[in-house]
Length: 285
Picture (cartoon, rainbow, N blue to C red):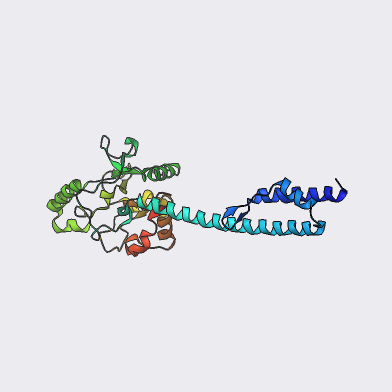
């Protein structure tokens, strides 16, 4: 083998390696050149080293183009996968969880949250009472109660999930006792946030079952400053158009929405429902 052929052979090896690495799709199908074929062409041709160097340069450019195309397709496929993933998550998330109930939307007697869990007895004010809460929202509730305890604030739970029937019985009891005034603080069945399983009524060990003094407690101040960090909001603040001020009643809406409402000093029920719905996909993130 002449020196020229030896040098060209090295160039051919580079070319073949590049072709094999790229895969080289041309016109929709794969061309694979073998080392033997190319070397035979070199032996029988007057191809110069410069010409082969140009071939290598062109292959490198083609490689760069292929990489760009592959990267573009990869990004597009990634975006499509993310969109499909979001749609799948959204389709599996209960759309009722961020709806405006309390005299706005209605939950029928057949609605039950997808999954409920028993709240541990240590969290419940009335010993022996069983209270349930939405299973996916419970870790956030537990994290909030634990965080409050670390700062010396004891949060006890009086009420969590209530079914359509339970809310009906409770409202009837209040109506017998308070007459028409019951509408100021108690929702009719089907309009209560408690039926969602994501609303909670708090008290403290020293306040007991009554709610009247909760607004002046350290627990209430702590919740106002920190509840949003765990995805909870005060449903009925002072001046709301739905019920009397309920300092003890908090609802889980997810960290993203709760943070937005806190930062912008907005009330959940004053925000357009379409804007609220945009946060549904992240409610359990």
